[in-house]
Length: 599
Image (cartoon, rainbow, N blue to C red; front, side):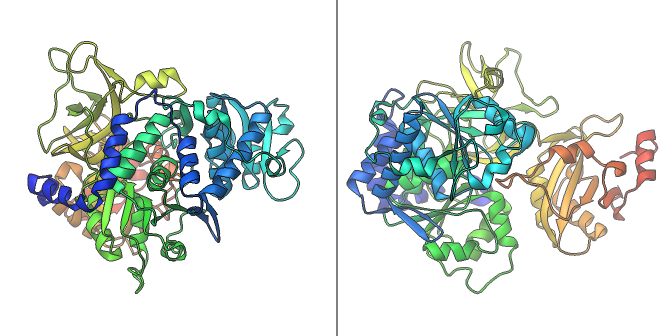
């Protein structure tokens, strides 16, 4: 697609590419029509249907083990009966603290079969942050894997703290004092489907998914069976279109929606196989793909960058992967990634844990997050105040085709906003009286490009776009230019405040695999970016800090800014574009603070 715009010819070719899977797409359309919030259906019931119709089909692979649909269903049933016998009922939350392994998925399935809510805790968290997450969901019980005991006991939520909560232990041998033995009790529980599953309706919550906390403490967003099953139909059947003999490899954490909702629902849409990875490893990734004979995998954009940064190998294309599903694959990496590894179809999507709609690239087009058939708008945005721009009448205005603006999605009966456990945080995501009095829209907090024909391209997070010299600077576009410079393996761009200046100046934190050449970098950026978008400061880092889902942590970088007293890594400044980036020290910092060094 020239200049990343979607044109009618692109769309027609894309539609034609779906014809071999016509029967699958028809099922997806029918399911989207018939699924309503009050429909008596759930994740657990879908699993029971597959266990009854294809009991011998492999449902899950993990390392060297495998479970059929019948086996995993029975396993989850035994756990469900065990939890129910100890008081877990419909609508209550059960906190699950596991690293990726089969037991984590079995426990999540067990909880939702009861009509309870699986709160998928992040095992990377500790202390105050993990305690905050647990407190958000008002858990009725906590199930902890043996590998996460230290994480749990870094909070006040553990048996020795005097808490009245029941604590369940999943691990080898006898559990520590104060924990119930989940494996032992479940081993003697009934394997029959729990009767509660048939009573659940789609509007009921099934999971709590926590935001990653890249800019503060996490929030817990509600995932309902309705949204999950709509992902099964809209993403799984309409866009991904897996077949029963497909194997989808997922090394992403189960507490993240890319794994728990997108990957798992796509697999269950076809009754295919999920191959769960313990954790992502760039060096072992393709070996694990071959080990499981995977035909698909789920990604996050930075995962693709890590794979591209690996040395080229003769066997880079020796696999059976025909499609990938994920989000965040940058436009500048798309073609290189697809060509190097021989990926037939990239099914990029756009969504968020709390969002009421999702976009998906169901037609196999390049460099797009796809389309959404539900009501959405891309509206003008004031980057200086980080607010949508309201006109004289108080309403918002849509951007022109090809323009960049704030993505908002209308909240309707068919596209409800489930929100967070915190009502105040939920209300903060809503925009009212947008185009007419009384309407209500979800504020995605993301800037996207209108590519035409209902398609969008992600540009930046609202908090990441900053204004300098009267112009908006999108960090993703600057990062794209930096990532094309030889030697840059990772680039993180953010805005920093200068004294007596409106807006924020650009700063880039770079990880390199070669020596830094400040003059060459300045020439490279000046050729590719407008003058106002070229970063004034550069910070060299041995490694970037990321969340467990590979999102760059910017909050500490922004707080430290360009102050040499707070940074023990090399700093550079762009005083003169002809000379390029020069070392920056305390004396130069003092000049900026006094106002004798200006930009």
